Length: 75
Image 1 (cartoon, one colour):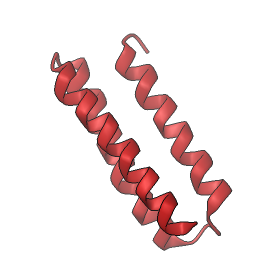
Image 2 (image 1 turned 30 degrees about the horizontal axis):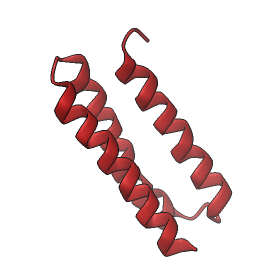
Image 3 (image 1 turned 45 degrees about the vertical axis):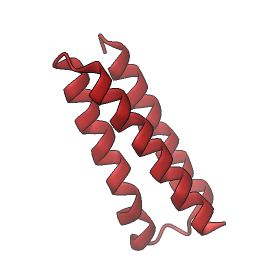
Image 4 (image 1 turned 180 degrees about the horizontal axis):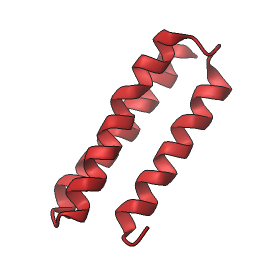
């Protein structure tokens, strides 16, 4: 873990993991809904490490926003 994007995306992964265990009944539908932001975080990490920080930050914010929308739907 050498860059800020590594730390941001790992923190995002851990946050999504906590959301999954805290707010779901561990069903497959919830997991598939959370795979979208997980893939977004993985892609944003690679893009950020490749030297395009603006696009990577946009993807990180979009992934966090999607998790918030899913949480709002579940609540």
